[in-house]
Length: 371
Image (cartoon, rainbow, N blue to C red):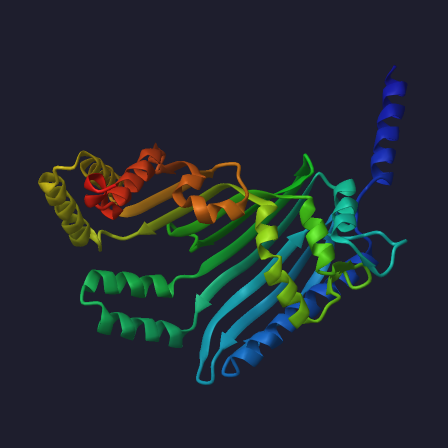
């Protein structure tokens, strides 16, 4: 029995090894070249648009981590004619969205591209990190001088100066899955200083597979040799065709959720202004005979109290959207939002209140007399 179990375990290990998605050195080198070529192209475009800027970028070096490629570029910096603006200790990139088919060469459709990827992975992941981003001494001095000149409040000016001296990280993450003939995506951005101060956003949505047809119509292909997007048409032709098909792209996409998080250690620098805002809202609430307006003032007061109850201000905004194409958002506006939550409390009714008040303000009393 033990012998059979051992043989079964060895067989399972062997089969797993044979079906491994580990990346070859050849694929990693090809991906590294593609990543550096596209990055250098972006840098050259930015330097052409802003000739006074100087970008110091060292090419990525990449290695395989099973099905993922991991790339790093150290000591990035941005300068102008006079001085350095900021630098980044390390740029890191990690992804498993890598085309590895060796038997196909040339251009393929993005439908075939994603079919290849999802045949190997249940989900596609990408992660970009700017590690230890810091303003230069010259930039910190500019912030300090500007805060002294423009901000009369010493506590707020000091807060701005302290924030400018911190070291920050920026993280971008994407996750793509496929089901029901849709590509589901989740994007997140985070900017923090390894302390208490954080700004982050998360967006979830989906695209119908019809978007691949639109890309084909624009002659957008994937180059399997260069591992990069290929615009068969000229940039001018692509831009013209994209603008003409922009609404069709919006019809194929949906938004599901959006989250925004903001934490800021204020050290009570904004307390006097928070108290003034609350006093003004309370006065408006006492003076207003309108029940809907009073409800709105009450909810805003509750929110301000919750955000500012501690020196560490915290705001979490979560939006849930109706299952409709993005193209419909323009007409529906706030009605496209199914639910809004702020700091864990349901504020969906506030949208209805705002809509009712706007209708009252925009209505003409004479319409009731002379319809």
